[in-house]
Length: 111
Length: 114
Image (cartoon, rainbow over all chains, first blue to last red; front, top):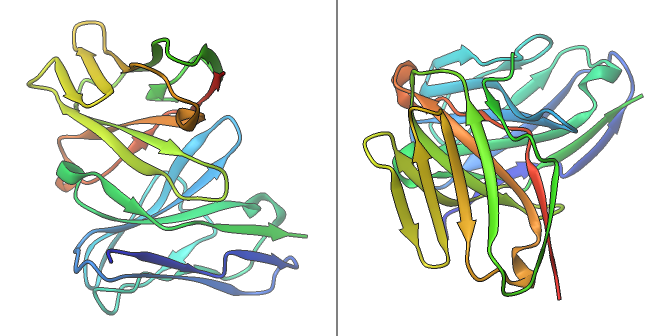
């Protein structure tokens, strides 16, 4: 079954404590991306990757890092989380011609 | 600068009737448009898409219309069913950046009433 797996699903953390949200896909897609969803703003792209070792900033990259060392994994790293990064995060993969497949989401709360 | 706008935060429709969700965009470089459906506690799921070379695409109960001159697209659901109650996002993809970037609207919450 084609899947995009995100972990954890829920996370509460404190300001400044580094965290990583993992994303893994089993569809062998080259493209992967991270989005955050906030009320009234829809989904906004944080970072994307066109292939292994190829990443680029999306629309809201500040405060985030990513890496793409292997095709299936695309972790999102918050080096020093702040309360304004409290959000619902989604990882996606695929191709626009066939629609993208999204993970189930990670709800992050930074206190 | 919201390049993709869904101006109706919510829409309520009676079961069996037509649901029409609207989306406007400002960037003329967008050449591919998609609609996603999202239930609570789940990721968005792809519904239907349309290329800018077309003005209509149909898939079962779902039809997307594109009016390039007005920079407007709409999603029609006929007939509406209770399971259609969800948040709907339109998204647009520009011709550059490897044609893989998606810009989303704010979403419209559709409620189908029995």
